[in-house]
Amino acid sequence: MTGTAAPPVDRRSADRVAWLWVAAAAAAWVAAYVLNRPLWDRLVFDVAGLDAGTHLGDGVHFFLYDSVKIALLLGGIVFVVAVLRTFVSVERTRELLGGRRQAAGYLLAAVLGVATPFCSCAAVPVFIGFVAAGVPLGITMTFLIASPLVNEVGVVLVGGSFGWDVAALYVATGLAIAVGAGVVIGRLGLEHWVEPFVYETTVGAAPGAARPTWAERFRIARSEVVAILRRIWPFLLAGIAVGAAIHGWAPEDFFAAHAGSDDPWAVPVAVVLGIPLYSNAAGAIPLVEAMHAKGVALGTSLAFMMSVVALSLPEMVLLRRVLRPRLLAAFVGVVGAGILAVGFLFNAIL
Image 1 (tube, helix red, strand yellow):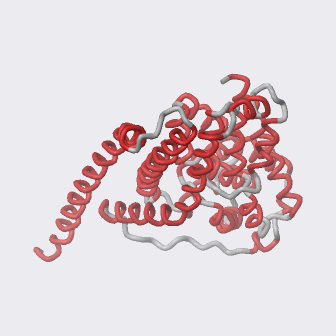
Image 2 (cartoon, one colour; image 1 turned 135 degrees about the vertical axis):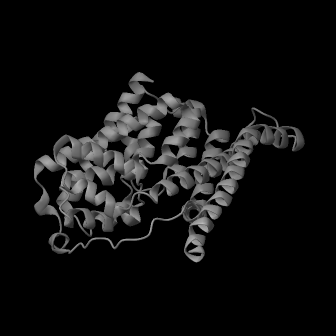
Image 3 (spheres, helix red, strand yellow; image 1 turned 90 degrees about the vertical axis):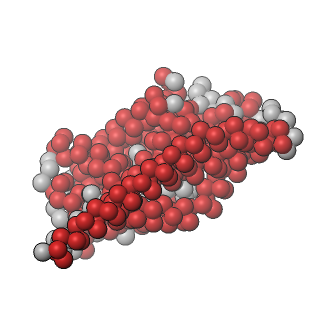
């Protein structure tokens, strides 16, 4: 009897130790985030002797401060979401959506898309799995649009850079784009524009697995944070560097004249420029922040970010494997129209 009772005790003990480590890491994270700006103010302006308000001083401060801020936000949010994701698998998501129809199905798909974000490399297998399992095409599209567009990193970074009222509006409009695009695609009856092999794919039930302990969940989350940071850090630093250059050297008058809220072409040009780029919210936010600081209207800046994360060219290349050209064009057109509407809306009310 003693031998059979020991493993649960060990699991509880491991969970307690894991929670202590997470609590200590959370305290260190909060301290680092609070001290980030004062630290770089001191090092850049007092120790290094650069002057605040100059091109060089502001550019260097922007790069150092934003690099640490975004790394902290990215690491913290990815860790939390990775823990949550251990409770929701792709198979479970597919089961939840498979029997849904109409408004409930679209809304649930949008919410689950935010809660279970997938990168563009996962777009094809997720699409095949959902459609082959009987999830309607429109609901599947809603999930795939919401997943990158309204991801946890983007929400936190938008909130940290522009305020939580802007972040809330970003979430609401992003979900509206996802649901609206899914409804339009679903109502058009475009299932025949999906590559035939998708419907011929057999999707089996996921094998049962033991419920992971908290220690195992935290270990999975830590590994995901390390993997994501390793994969994106060059793009992240490149985006921050460009943002620092814009912040320090780009002329305010140029942006105010050509990308302000009064220019009707600013939002369409921003959306078109964002499509060929490949980045995520972590890499795009520094550009958005710097562009806005130089006079680019907030709606124009966010429309640029949305087009980068939701309509990137690499994702379109991947989706072409499962979507015929006309459906892919309809997808881009509907989502692009939604992003344009959001850009103009933000410019009008903010």
